[in-house]
Each structure stands twice: as C-alpha cells, then as structure tokens.
Length: 241
Ligand SMILES: [Zn+2]
Image 1: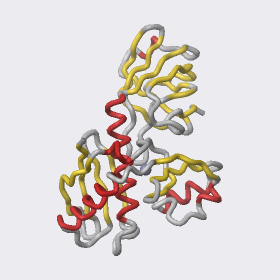
Image 2: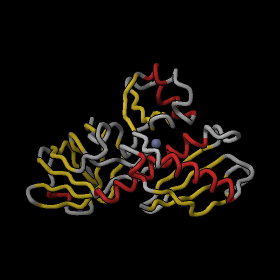
Image 3: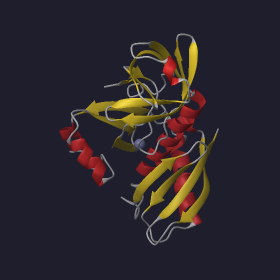
C-alpha cells in the first residue's frame, strides 16, 4: 500500500520514494505526496525525477489502496526499484486545499442554518472555482449570498483546521460525521477514520487535503447559482485574497 504523506500533512510538497510498480499508464511508488482524485478534489500534477530525468505527472488517481501517478510519456525509462524524487504543482494543489476547506466551511455553516440541515448533496472542485449542490426546490440569489456572507464572517474568525484519527466504530457515534449514506457504509469497514475538524464549525470524516487555518482562505465570492432540476440547485464560488 502506498504511504500517503498528504494525510498527516497537506503542506508536504516533495518527497523521495521508490518505484514499486510500472503500469502502461504510470507508476506506483512506496510513498507519495501526490493526492489522487477523490471526494470532489482533483488529482495532483507535478514532476517525478528518476536518474536526473524529469517525468511530467499529468494526473493522479487511486488504484485500489495504491496511488497511480499518470506519466505523460517516456515510461520505458522508469523501472521497478528505481529511486525517485516527487514534486507536486504546489500552486494548483494549494488552491484545491483552499476550495476543499471552503466547501467544508459552507457545509458546516449551512447545516447549522434553520431549514438547511442535510440539504447539501454534493460538491466538486475545479482549478478556478468550486460548486456545492443543494437538495432545494427553490434557491434565490439572496439565499446564496446570505450563505456566502456568513461563511466570509467565519473565515475572518481564524478557525484552526485539525486532523485526527479514530476507529470506525467511534466515528459512527458522532452525528453527521459522514454526510452521505455511502460514506457511512465506508466508515463501517475502516480500522482508522481520518477526521477533519474546523474548530467549532464542522467535523467530518474526510480523505482530502486542507489548509491549517481559515485565514488562509481570503474571501469567498458567489459566482452564480444554477437550477439543475426540481430538487437540485447549484452554487458556484471563487476565492480571492
Ligand atoms: Zn471533504
């Protein structure tokens, strides 16, 4: 199983590793700083250096318990047992971390607003924006702006974001620790569950990368809302310093 260095510290940008397996698409290492796409967060890109040759990683995906680094070309030059150095595209990843933490913040805040509890059904992060889906029949610009304004006030309160671990059994005792039914099913089978806590605002089981304090988020801006069906409304937001 690939050792996932981003789990304990999302700020690790580089590491040394050993090539465990080469597939027709890319490489699997013994340890990595590359985050594989999942939970609405895109996979990392970056560089893997082997014997002074740089290989471009164009995406990172899960392969069972392992992490597959998808390499652009020249794969025949990398061999099992080679030692390498990994470097992620930090600027891009840091944006993903900010968007991911913002989504948790929105989730935590919306779930405490009267009439909104349990109504967030999904989210997705893009390079320059993110979206949150609501199971609502009607959603106005005013309602969306109200959420954004409340989140911006929380950002300014400088809440710490902490990572902790517990057993699946203990995690399931915490109400709302996973917001989806498949998520709760997944936790049942896990020996250790990683919990992301935004001090005083949100707490949930999560495998993504996050910033350490809400002050890093700057400001979130409402981009647009979309009607995606009778009970599916979508909010897009951007971030600015
Ligand atoms: Zn998350």
